[in-house]
Image (cartoon, rainbow, N blue to C red; front, side, top):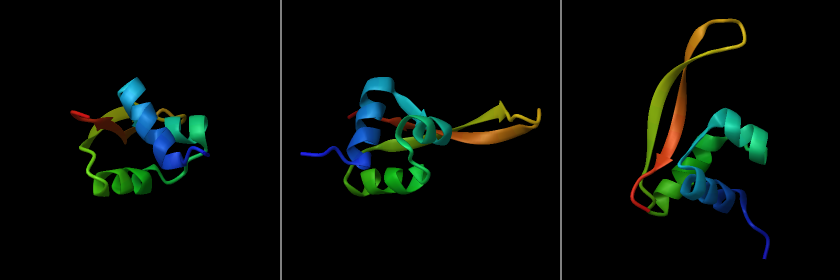
Length: 72
């Protein structure tokens, strides 16, 4: 059976602890991580978003969400 993107993101959360949108794009080609997180939450997974300030390629500070799986 083929692994879905939702299953891949869930596995990443279980094994790596967290994921950001950039990591999802780079590792899995996922451009709508928030939609997958929403689906996982609807399936009963407890996921939180932790916002962090990072510096972008232009040297500007910006907020990025890192999603974490809690108690799964």
